[in-house]
Length: 68
Image 1 (tube, one colour):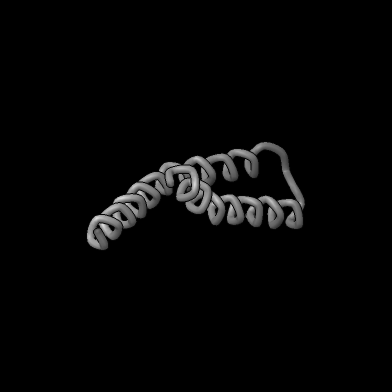
Image 2 (cartoon, helix red, strand yellow; image 1 turned 120 degrees about the vertical axis):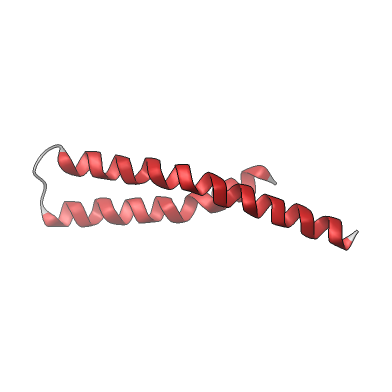
């Protein structure tokens, strides 16, 4: 039974990592598109980058808990 649980954990981790690729791509494209629209101040660009990095940190955790 222990090896079955490890296999399930490893499979779930693999799916989370695979899903992270397209999730990170969407976030990066969105941040880049928003930054390129109007001229924004450095402070606003920094905040946008921080929100993007926060989203990239939350996506794998959300995917993990949604798939379990």
